[in-house]
Length: 178
Image (cartoon, rainbow, N blue to C red; front, side, top):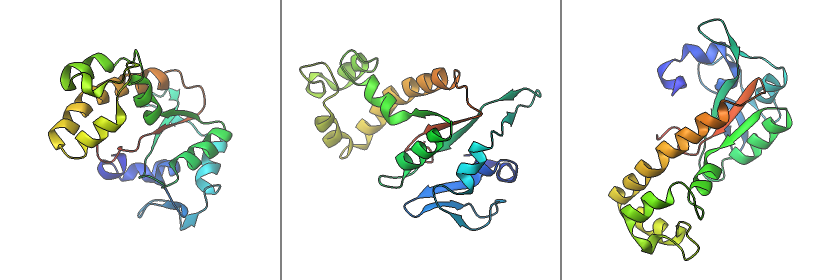
């Protein structure tokens, strides 16, 4: 979103200029990073250098970076590299799994919206049934997202509030679609 709405931000924060893909990381067009880098290249070096984000009020805080990409794009690999360099991580897929496990915060709303058919005997989301439904019914997908996304945002905010490293990565497969 920052890349789209505030392209000048790419010139100030090199880490935002990195896209992770199956062939490593690469600079976004118009950024201040030349060329292409492997996963262990300049983008990782920026995190290791310990740069921090200066807020509008002059306070120094954690720079929160969204890491996004499709299945097999290298998100997990890139996140592990950044974590090994000391970055804090929040994985929204992991949060979604926590919310939909037995006793998860999303289960009552899912049960109410979709019926018991979509809840396992153990009380977790029946992922196979839900997958079949949401891939064939856009309204059902939107209803599930309306349940999960606000809960995920709350949990991301809670977890990022306790980041201690200069950089924190939020791994979000749907960042550019949301």
